[in-house]
Length: 263
Image (cartoon, rainbow, N blue to C red; front, side):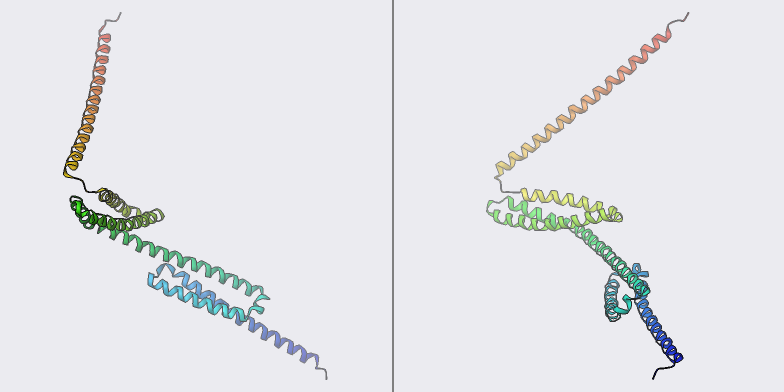
């Protein structure tokens, strides 16, 4: 038996109402996921390093729930432009949040790595002083050549660590300008340690006669440099004096010309 028109119309209206309520429920659930991400994003700069790790886990948990719900309602969402737009907004918000978390983690790690480099260089003076003294003492005795090589090997490993900390600090100072003032002492200490490293690696056993010859040669080289500098200084002084004499001569000539009577 056919249903009356009014009854059929009433059923259609009821079905549409149910569908609208279902769509509204889906929309609200999707917006809740989206808002959770926005709330986290608004506080991203306030989290500590440890808190940031927990936030990362929370975002993963939210996204897992989103994916489960999205897949369950995928057919309905695909047929509704408003729901598709919410889905697009959610994905964009998630990516922006993940990028912000990654950036904050990088900043925290950079601060930690730079501080470690600072501390490392501040504690190397005594270590390198002892290494050089020991290496120098071993280089005086021929039978300790093997021990000297061990010290050199130990220093090479240590300098590799020096180089690594320096490279990290330099890279971070180039990336973050606020590290530049703190990088200068690191660079100065690096140059100092590098010079000591080169001296240690150059040490070798030499007979005392050869050491004396090398010392005298070094004195002679210094004397030659000082002699050259003294000659250069004397020439500069003579040139300066010649310029002053020429200036005085010009002034005297100008004065004589001005003394002639004018008609």
